[in-house]
Amino acid sequence: MFEWVIIGGGIHGCTIANYLIKSGKTTIDDLLIIDSHKEPMEKWKKLTSRIGMEYLRSPSVHHIDVNAFSLQNFRKLINHTEFYGQYKRPSLALFNEHCDSIITNVHLKDCWEQGRVIHVNKEEGKWKIETDKGQSVLSNNLVISISVNEDLHIPKWVNDLGEESASHISHIFSEELTNLNDLTPPILVVGGGITAAHTVIKLCGLFPGKVTLLSRHRFRVHGFDSDPGWLGPKNMKFFSEIEDYKMRREEITNARHKGSIPNDIYQKLIRLEKQGALRLVFDEVEAANKHNHEISINLKGGSGDFAFKHIILATGFESKLPEKGWLKQLIQKENLACATCGYPIVNQGLEWCPHLYVSGPLAELEIGPTARNISGARKAAERIVNYSE
Ligand SMILES: Cc1cc2nc3c(=O)[nH]c(=O)nc-3n(C[C@H](O)[C@H](O)[C@H](O)COP(=O)(O)OP(=O)(O)OC[C@H]3O[C@@H](n4cnc5c(N)ncnc54)[C@H](O)[C@@H]3O)c2cc1C
Image 1 (tube, helix red, strand yellow):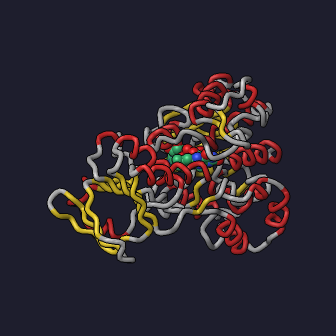
Image 2 (cartoon, rainbow, N blue to C red; image 1 turned 90 degrees about the vertical axis):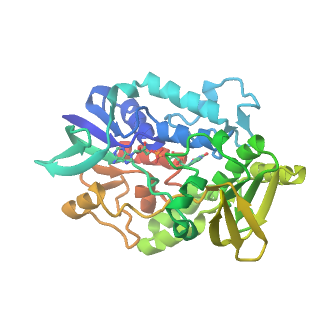
Image 3 (cartoon, rainbow, N blue to C red; image 1 turned 135 degrees about the vertical axis):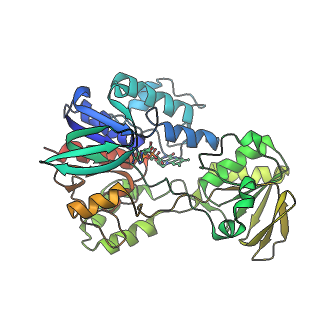
């Protein structure tokens, strides 16, 4: 029997666990994190290292610890190779090292349980959580911080190509794609956002002159993925006063600079194109065909026809909640409130019903456009700590 169980041990789950322990809300013995991975934040580390991300997009005050300056204090000497630009964006290496130090100091691995949650229900006022490993635990409080990033977005033209092309096309976040070094050029990367940009920068280092980026839109250059006004009362006061959740969803959609990249990454892409390492094409796939050992692409805007040995999709994730499975059952069984977009309606303390809390995308209608980010994890942790009994 635990006081708190957290489902999902990514950036969000680990931030919440750290805040719960440091605030004295619970102890390591009364807390359990259940995650399908072996280690805390394993998914984050895998995805960010795969695309060769050098610096985070977010500033150094966004991390998993309670004190906003924890990361800067961690590296007393602010070295330009570890922080980038006016917002001191940390290098991925420094950010991960800081996370590891927090995870070690708070002993988060001592409350880690590897397993995939497959069922949750309420039994005599306690949450009963069951995993695919046949484990079953009870808890007074439950936090769901599972993100919504398990369903990859695959464009229709890829599905139309069928199974025989599968060995030529990979989603950058697919479990099967292990090493970009093993790809055979020429390579096409499809996508126009930050993941696509990082991916082509890495690929141009490996296969200069043999990489093409295909984006449906011209580059959208923004420092952050939403205006910093959304971090505080400037935008959030008005957002929190909106009672209609459909309008809140519209505000979130409008606020996000979807498919955008910061200026330093934009400059790198332009440089690579000038050097002849990268070809940029702004168009959209009309259809694709497999010929011999290549995929040929026809483009809607007539930018030309191209053939590639490998295609990498940097097309993101499906953003809707999983329609099947334990979460859906829990919503039905406990009659949990959801807006028309399918996402939870929760109170200010991120409580969906008594003693059930959410973070990340699930807390979006309360936390606003930054809910999925690291800053959103900090806000969720603060709210859960401050509002829970
Ligand atoms: C490449 C990339 C770069 C990013 N860069 C930044 C940045 O610079 N700044 C920023 O603020 N944000 C950034 N983000 C956005 C966001 O901060 C990250 O996606 C972050 O990892 C989200 O954390 P999370 O804990 O919600 O999700 P995840 O890291 O995906 O963790 C969720 C965990 O839940 C587990 N899980 C899911 N379902 C179950 C289940 N049924 N049972 C058990 N476990 C389960 C998963 O296995 C996973 O370990 C970036 C995102 C990506 C993809």
